[in-house]
Amino acid sequence: MDAEYVVVGAGFAGSVMAERIASVLNKKVLVIDKRGHIGGNCYDCPDEHGILIHKYGPHIFHTVNEEAWNYVSNFTEWNLYQHEVLAFIDGHYAPVPFNLNSIRALFPGSFAQKLENKLLEKFGFNKKVPILDLRKADDADLKFLADYVYEKVFLHYTEKQWGMKPEDLSPEVTGRVPVFVSRDNRYFQDRFQGMPVKGYTPVFEKMLSNRNIRVDLNTDYRKVRGQLKYKKLIYTGPVDEFFEYKFGKLPYRSLDFGFENHKKEFYQDASVINYPNDYGFTRITEFKRLTWQKADSTTIIKEFSKACEKETDIPYYPIPADEPVKLYKKYEEEAKNNKNVIFLGRLAQYKYYNMDAIIASSLARFKELKVEG
Ligand code: FAD
Ligand code: UDP
Image (cartoon, rainbow, N blue to C red; front, side, top):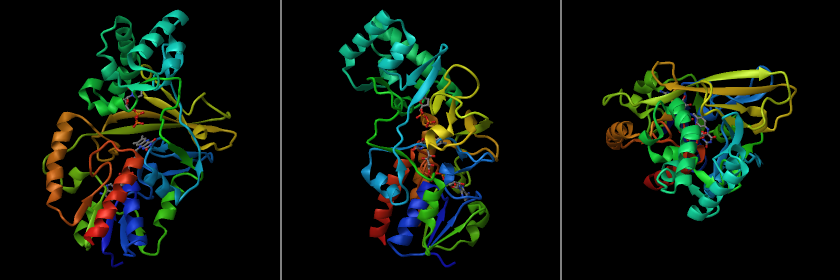
């Protein structure tokens, strides 16, 4: 295929760009991915028991960005799912993000009331307070609460997930799950939330089924880069790999997944239960509670985080901390010298992006490309 545009990676970053170039510019696009499927880390498929699973960990779509929501809505209808998470703390299940209901679940009535009053007085109702900020409170009761939440919700979970303490990561990481002075148990308050009715993979199938797009799977950019001809390359793989690690390897966190099928209708009382302090995994997700699938058995996934070290480890999370970001900046500078390459996505931009942020930034980058011609 003679393609003016080559896209490396068939996740959201690559697929949005391919779809826009093919549909709006009416140009030919070759998409390659080293995996045997499209969808990147959002890929889902039925397991051997017929349960729709997310192969690379649970994905819930949520956004405040109307453009991103409308864009994906061109390719799917939605179950209007609203995500709620429990954390297993000292033998009890409490809502996370930690909120006024969590206080009630974990502390006796009169003390819970006192903590609640103090939070309301200091921050006001419906306010979100990152744990690292709450820890700066000087009131003795709020300090007690902050230390408790830090220790029981954040510290050990973060050590498991990142191999680091919360304060050694960018505040944006634990800031994703702030203490919420509210009785709203939802994980996200975004205006648009949902799960694609038929799953994520059909979304990608629709995006990429355009006569201008050819998808070559099981094709590793490192093996074919010498043979590719293009006007523009859109690269969504790891940025350090693209530059053959010339400044050194960027660190990533990888995951091992433990899938289990249980011969009962449901396994647990929430879609996701976090285990900050117990066991080796960080959380358990029950897919049927996300997808609303009806079936006699149920499949769960346990997530075990680890450093990304072996060739076969998948780089899932860039690490938002000073040293890695400093190293990334060198690659970012180098990338600017490659005018015919667009670096896009979680791995190429080394950013802890959610799906909606990837879609929004790909749509924005496409608009620039349209102007550049
Ligand atoms: P990817 O999806 O990683 O796609 C990159 C693609 O490039 C991959 O398919 C890869 O195989 C391919 N590639 C890499 N190197 C090469 C090469 N050399 N040659 C050819 N192909 C290559 N976001 C949310 O909004 N909500 C969630 O609930 C959510 N949950 C998540 C849970 C987990 C466990 C993880 C890891 C992420 C989660 N995310 C979630 C984030 C979401 O997965 C990302 O935002 C999104 O997948 C990033 O899209 P991308 O296209 O940048 O990268
Ligand atoms: N976090 C935590 N305890 C929790 C939930 C989250 O310590 O019960 C911290 C942890 O550092 C985690 C980060 O907040 O990596 C972001 O959580 P999120 O659920 O957004 O992570 P993701 O779904 O991206 O893995």
